[in-house]
Image 1 (cartoon, helix red, strand yellow):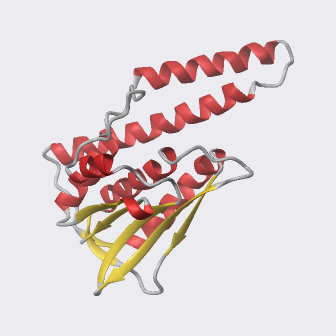
Image 2: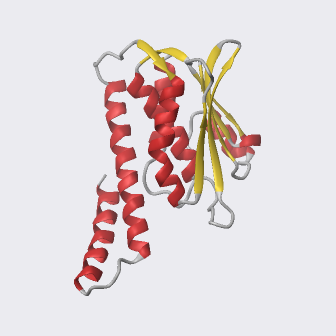
Length: 208
C-alpha cells in the first residue's frame, strides 16, 4: 500500500503546486493520481478478501445472481477503463444466473478478472480503442462468467504459467505480485468453481 500511496501523494502535490500559480492541472498528474487511487482501491479490496478467505470468518452461502454482480462490476470499472480508452461491455442472460455462495467474494473475483483484462491489454488510443466483454452464460444449465479481451494473444509460456496458478513473468512489475488472480482461484475453490484461460481469445472464465 505504501508505494501507490506515495505515488498518489506525489501526483497530488504536483496538482497543488500548479493550482497555487493559477495553472491548470497537468494531465499526467491527474492520470497518475487516478490510476494510483484505483490501484489502492483494488488492493484494499483484495486484502480484505484475502483476510476473509484465510481467516476463520465463515463464507456466506445464499443465492447470488452472477448477471447482477457482473453488471455492477462493469459499471464500477467502466470509468477507469474508459480513461485507458477501453470500453467494457456486459452481456447477461434473460433469466437470472443463480449460484449459491458469498456475493462479496464472487464480485471481487469477477472484478479482478475484468481489471486484469483492462490493465494488461496493449495500450489503446482514442483512434484505436480497446474492448473487454463480460459474458454471463449458461453451459448445460450451469452458469459461467467469461471475460474476453481484444488484446494480443499471450504466449504459450504465459498461458502455461496461468494454468499452473503462477503469475506471468513481468520484469517491470514491482507491485501487486499477482494477488488478484490468487484471490480469483481462492474464491473459485471456496465455491467449487473452476478457473480457465484461453489464449486464442484472451479469455478468462469462472464457472461451476
